[in-house]
Image (cartoon, rainbow, N blue to C red):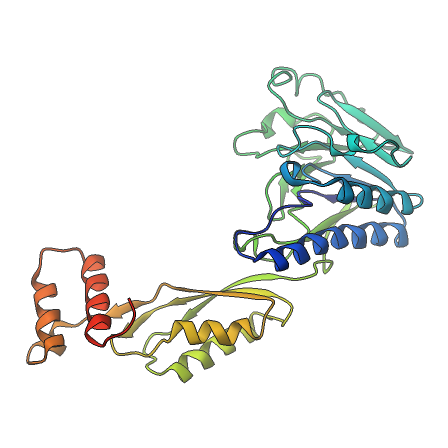
Amino acid sequence: MKIIHCADLHLDSKLETNLDRAKARIRRAELVRSFERLADYAARNGVRAVIVAGDLFDHNSVTKSTVQTVASVIAAAEGVDFLVLPGNHDSSNPFEMLETLPDNLRFFSDSWTSFDYDNVTISGIALSRSNANVVYSSLSLSPERFNIAVMHGDISSEINLPSLRGKNIDYLALGHLHEHSEGKIDERGVYAYSGCLESRGFDESGVKGFYLVDTQVKQYTFVSGLSERNMLEVYVDISGLMQYSEIRSKIDSELENAGAREQDMVKVVLTGSVDLDANKAPDQLLKCLEGRFFFAKIKDKSRAEIRADDFKNDISLKGEFVRQVLSADLSDEEREQIVLLGIRAIRGEEL
């Protein structure tokens, strides 16, 4: 039997931290399309159930239209059950907006709720203050069955992983953390965070997807490739580069190495040490990136090389200014910032 484990889709997230309204609207639609592709994958590949381990919707901004679309996608996936667990963003059930629900849609609750398929049992619980004292003691699973448990929370703080040892769990499907990861519960079982299907911010950059669980051979495979776009955070060391053309060429090379495509969203972080007179031209660099990608931003974390000997005999206004700053009782970071601002002012550049 095949089962999909996904989580943290956060459908209808506002997404306007990085994007303007028009592009945020496009991305919201793309997140829903990723869920549609997942449902289609399940139907085409003989998947019996899709587990959503919390935060299917972004509760505070979800619309009835999106809930209706998701319900229709679920209903169209013949032979596939969708088992939905509330997450920390689900203070209520958005499906309650609808008058009728698909027959293949099921819900977990704040007590252990189980669904049986042949020799497989899928049990899930929504964590709350009211059930905190009985979550682990109330879980009872047969050692003769293949058991999947479903929870939403952080195993470093909210979920007590040691309390799940010896509970006959074969696979613990987790939600809440947006990067995929996996590990051991005990000699019998493993746990996995599927992460999210689509990146919503650069703190969620990286490969996105879901886990495909094959209960017959006890195989757990991370499947990627459904994302509409990737979000890439690329660090570019520009040490020793002086000219705009050199810096742009280095950025292009690093983006190519990272596999950036024109439909992706990229964040370029400039690092390294550069000469005070280096022509970084960040505004022009950003313009070039914006013309190539769906969204782009640049963060300049490079450091200016300020060497006292370079200004020792400089009788210009710039030389006198730098010497005064270097002799002041300031931290290295404060000196760098003041020198950079001062030189830009001396050159007549916009501050």
